[in-house]
Amino acid sequence: MTTPDGGRGPLTWRVARLVERRVETPTAQTLVLDVPGWPGHLPGQHVDVRLTAEDGYQAARAYSLAAPVDGSRIELTVQRFPDGEVSPYLTDVYAEGDPVEVRGPVGGWFVWRTDQTAPVLLVAGGSGVVPLMAMVRARRAAGNRTPFRLVYSVRAPDDVVYADELRRRARDDGGLDVAYVYTRRAPDGWRGEPHRIGLADVNRHGWPADLAPLCYVCGPTGFVETVADLLVGLGHPTRRVRTERFGPTG
Image (cartoon, rainbow, N blue to C red; front, top):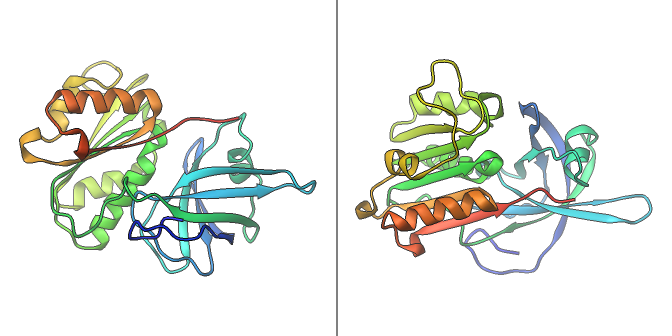
């Protein structure tokens, strides 16, 4: 596994149990799991979750860690895909006290460390906001004053994950700016029409390249490729554009 400092160590499956569930959107839930022996993690890392059926069939999926370390507890925000093997079980069947297996933390590149001081641009597509929210939360918990900007692209207002928390943090966390791009339906009073994220959005809400920000982009593959190309086109060095992509699986 990738240890919290980005090193490599033996991969270990641990038994985790559900201790709390929070509904985020009509299709997304946050699961709080207790994982005895959890080694800790960095914001941006993820875990593998494995289910085993009575007949021995196994299915595993990767989920980003949504919050800073809290002892043996971790948080995963799961988007339900109707045709998926794992997410419908986690959102509709998995009950408090039930076990699942988790392995991690995984990943050493798409991480933000609380001793970093360069401005940070976070660009999220849909549930790609999860690891970026872990960075926002870690910044606040550490009392770090590094300026953060989050650009969050969603289909409609009802699809905003962590909506209440983001409103509160945008108001109360000094140095954090949050901007939204709506692709299908915008809230009442919103200026402009729904659209896919483009150069004007990244240019308006991001950091200029000459400030040398660290850029983290997470979302579906097409979204990530588009945003990464826009950032490089605006002069951001590729080494400072870190990407994480995902997609629904069967």
